Amino acid sequence: MPLRLRKLIGTVLIIALVLLYALIATTVASALLGASPWWVHLLYFLLSGLLWILPAMLIIRWMERPVDSE
Image (cartoon, rainbow, N blue to C red; front, side, top):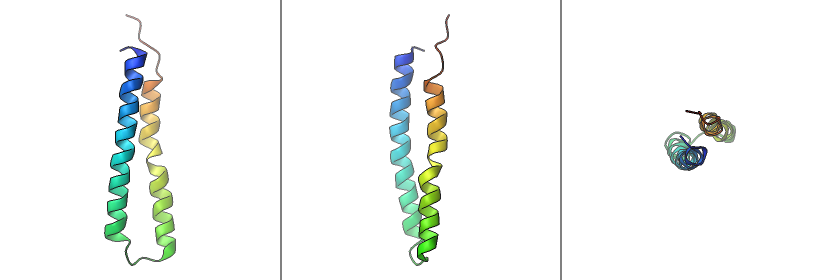
């Protein structure tokens, strides 16, 4: 697969990941954290704010792989 196509697909995947992840994280926070103390909110948003980086790193690693010469 050409590098430019792989980067285009990866970019679209990262944007979709961020949008979907933000929607899910906000929905979970709204449903479960309503009456929780401030420190629970802080922990939740700290962890959920960092957790999306793991799948994004895998997508970026895939995007930056060298082109296979055939």
